[in-house]
Image (cartoon, rainbow, N blue to C red; front, side, top):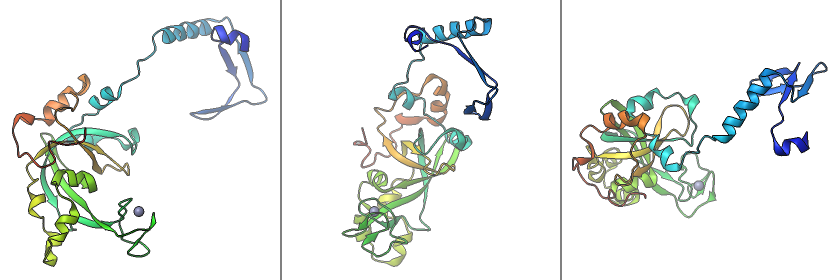
Length: 255
Ligand SMILES: [Zn+2]
């Protein structure tokens, strides 16, 4: 069989197997197997195999995958978490309509891994990295965004938020004089309201709450794939042409 298998497929039929789960079968004392049986089922199987081998499904390029990842807010909300994981990203074009700072707009975190210092062993010790030089202020923006299909909450953290705002959270914190400024939006952040961006979003905990992984450069963002073309149109009503407020960071977004 090993010799024969070098030149052509050997079709094996297993009978009397115990099915443990959808992905596992196991032999039993009554199992039997047949190699290259000349029966119609095997002939048909072999013919289909030849067709498949002659016409392999083309692998998608990263650009194709990106283009197929466009979603409207309505579509993002309807996603079934069973069908993606924490590494799956989606493209959406949305406007920032509100940033809720009732719990603040920044947090003290590790300078290396950005983990919150809340619950850390000591002020200069990250629960994950151990001793650190000094914790830093990172952005945590709880944004409400909108497109033509609806609104949703979107978290924008750390460097991504810094790219949007144009200055670091540390700099804004340095300007704080009154305690209540921790719970009010600095002008630099408030200026973002009304601006429209193409975000690549992901769902870290696969529970339907999305955060921004990166801000896409409108010039290099892929056209939506055919199947998703309607989404782009819906998501982008009068769209990119409108010279909505250009913001610091807009022009040198991640490439
Ligand atoms: Zn850390």
